[in-house]
Length: 493
Image 1 (cartoon, one colour):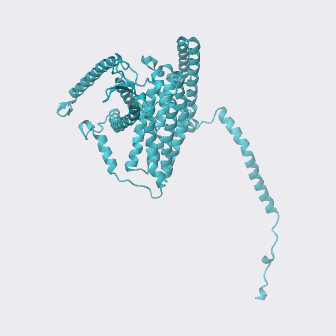
Image 2 (cartoon, rainbow, N blue to C red):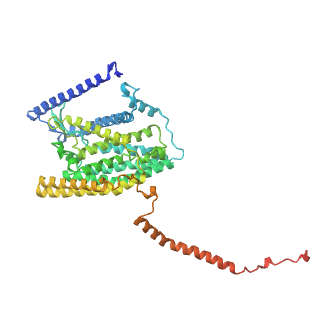
Image 3 (spheres, rainbow, N blue to C red):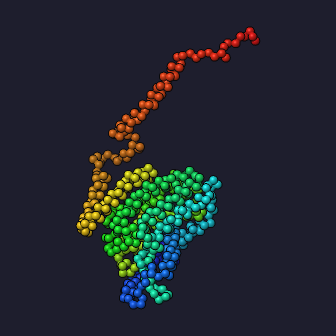
C-alpha cells in the first residue's frame, strides 16, 4: 500500500523533490559561474575584500553568527529526527510519523514539551553550580564552530553599489587547531560539575567516567590533529582546507588514513556517543550525569550532545575530508555551502549507524583501548607523516608518495600479522583468553604473580605465627592472685 502526503503518492513526491533539487543545483551552478565570470571581467563592480571595509568587517561577523546559529540550532532539532528515523529503519520500526507530514514537525513538538515540562531541582544539590553546568556544556560546543568555515569566500552586492568578497566564517585565527582543542576540553567541565553538583551517586559516577574518558581520548585526538597541521604547514583551519583544494585525492584522508580513523574514533568518544556512551549508561547509572536534570536544563544537555555531533562532523570534514572542496566548487563558490552541509549530514548518518550497530563496551576495555591501542597508533601516525614530509621536501612529491605508500603497506601488514592470521586449530571454538573470564591459571605471568605474592606473604605469616607463639607462652605462666580475690571469712557475717 503506497503512502500519500497531501494526497500525492510518496514515490512521486520523492521523485519530484529530487528533480527540483538537482535542477536548482544546476541553475545555481550556471548562475554562479556567469556571475563569477562577470565579476572577474573587471569594471566598477570589482569585488572589495571585506577586511578592507570598516562597515563590512563590523557587520559580517554579526550577521554570519546569527545565520550560522539559526542553521546550527535548526540542524540540531532535525538531527534528533534524523536519528530517530534511521534507528527505526535499522530496527525495522516505523519511527515518528504523527506530528506533521511524515513526522517532520516532531522536533517542534519535543521542544514545546520540554519548555512546559516541570523543572525539578534536588533539595540538597549545589544550586549555583547545578544551574550553570548545562550552559558550560552547551556554549563551548557553539563557540568551537567559530573557526570552521561553511564555504569559500563569496562575492555579494550591497546597497552602496559595490561588490564585497565575504568569508563564510566568524574568524580565521592562526591557531585554529589549538582553539578547537582548548574549547572542546571546556565542555567536559559542564559534565563533571553537573554530576558533582547533583549530589547523586549515579550522576557522580557518570561525571567521573566522562572525565577519565576525556583524558584518555583527548591525547589521541591532539596527536591526530597534528597530522593535518604538518601536511598544510599551518594551524589555521582555513589554510588546512585550502591545502586540500583541487582533486578529492588531495584530501588528507588519502595521505594518512590512520590519523583520520583515529580522529573519528576520538571525536565519537569526545561526544559520548555509542559505543562510548558509558557516562550516561542507563542500564548502570540510570542516566549518568543527567540523572537529576529535567525540563530545559535537560534539553540543554541533549542539545549539547547533538551540537557536538555537528561540530565533530565539521572538524573531521575540515581537517581530513577536504572541507567545502569538491567538484565545481571553484567555479561556483556558493556550492561550497551545499557540499559542507552534505558532508555533515553524511557524518551524522555515520554517528547514527554506529549507535545502531555497535554495543556499549565494558568500561575497563574502553580505557584500555584508548591507552593501549589508540594512543600508540596516534604516535605512529605522527611519525608516518613526519618522515613522509621530510622525504617529500628532499625528493619531491614522488618521494613523498613512495614513503607514504610504504608506511601504509607496513601498517596493513602489521595489522594482518597481529589480528588477521588464521588460528592453527580452526575446529576448536573461539574462547576469550581473558583470565578474568576463563579463570585459567597458567603461563609465565601467573607463575611470576604467585612468586611475588609468596614473597609479600612472608611478613604476614611470620607476624601471625609470632602472635600465636606469644599467646601460648602467656598461658604457661599462672596469673598471680590479687588481694581482692582472697576468700572472705564467713564467720564475720
